[in-house]
Image (cartoon, rainbow, N blue to C red; front, side):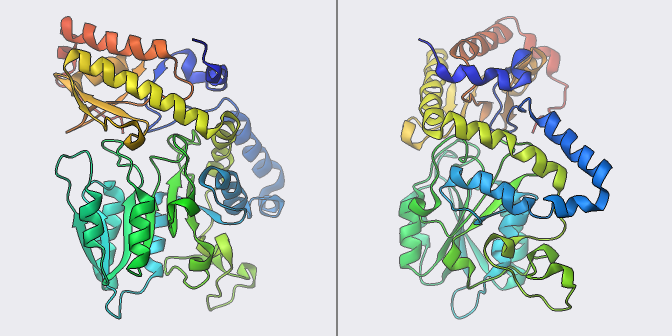
Length: 396
């Protein structure tokens, strides 16, 4: 069966030398990125400080406009931020936690970096965290989550796709209940945007953060924050900077927040990362997110079949509608096996409690999946994993 999406493989140089199955951690670099970074260097070299007036200053919003179609947002609604931790901290800092609304509801399977932000900052702002546990380490009961959202809840801050298991939460259902209780919903969509369809308005989100690092193939430093326009018009982040000022170059002593996405910017932006950040999303828009999702469902289903045939424990939802783009399966000596795969240019990662995480993307061939699992068989059969028992695993 021919795969029309494989014509995009030539856009990613690393695919010529490796089997790249780690787009859930760092997407493959588009071949156009070096030229974009050279463009940045040339502008800096020839224009110097004048480059700010030639588009640099607007880039946190103009690059956000490249992301907006992939999350169902409008032009001028998406602000680029350095990382999701900063974006979530901005959301947290924009809300008050008085008048009986002092609770933030999260889950035990949210990404640790986001949990760190909330755990450390919430108490200082007068809020308390309620964490909904997981019974199986794969999913979180939405019934239990909904029960935790009540009249004291100010914010529900959850992941769209749980990072450890790729479990897809029913965000629309959760958001509807949160709104009925008078609460807002902040969504960490880092593990969903770029591999499954996302529409902020259909989901009912009030805030959404994500990044181009993973499925969007845009590299580090390019994260984004969307705020529902009617919500954003009535609040402003305490974590802010001069780019969020209505008249930044007036250098006024008091803050006067700008409108729309500009309101959520911070200090001087990371321009090189923004030059690189556009290339992957442009390719994803050309491919079409529905086609990406259909292929992802097919290939992750095949990975589960291959794991089941070998008796490996699968740490991923069986229901395709509840499964993101990653399948983790726990093989004997999984950490060492993952290192052996890396040494053979089969790029995966490993997570304690989950096993080897395999993340095919639209540029992955079916043959690569079959060959990767066959290589795991060989590593185990020939005990090649023993070479790596004292090796530190550094892949994030």
